Image 1 (tube, helix red, strand yellow):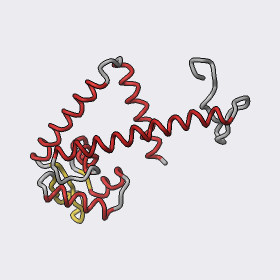
Image 2 (cartoon, one colour; image 1 turned 135 degrees about the vertical axis):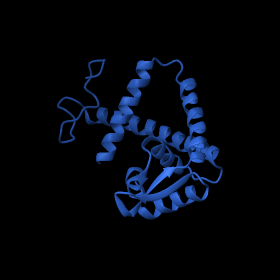
Image 3 (cartoon, one colour; image 1 turned 30 degrees about the vertical axis):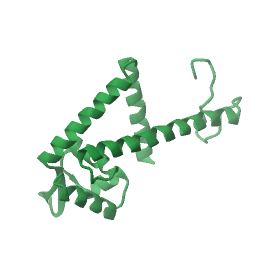
Image 4 (cartoon, helix red, strand yellow; image 1 turned 90 degrees about the vertical axis):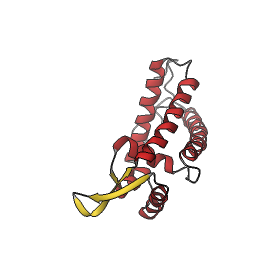
Length: 169
């Protein structure tokens, strides 16, 4: 229930609105969500493009997510990266090859499976990415300076919840 005492936005397990809630009212909340996510995603894509070009001017914007994942988790198989990012093996192979040619990532045999390779950031990749990521975080701090830290934490929690739901499909 919302703070105003209204049940708008809630649906039953069947996907129908609860009794007494007009379907149009529920749809308005989801339309607003769609609109705000579209704006957020458009800005995030543009921002990622700017950030990744600061790592290296020849990189595609999609490479930023790969760098984030490798920085956070360390060595990963290309198949794991492809699954996480949501692209096919061929696309992942092409993106990793570009990163490798620029000296930002390297591959090494997987000790657990000699047929597989592990990808990791090189020292240069780690340094370049770290500088850009620090600048991005500083920008978030500036842009959200008038937010309470609890609000920032709540936004992060809700986005994490949304991402987990999307991952599960």
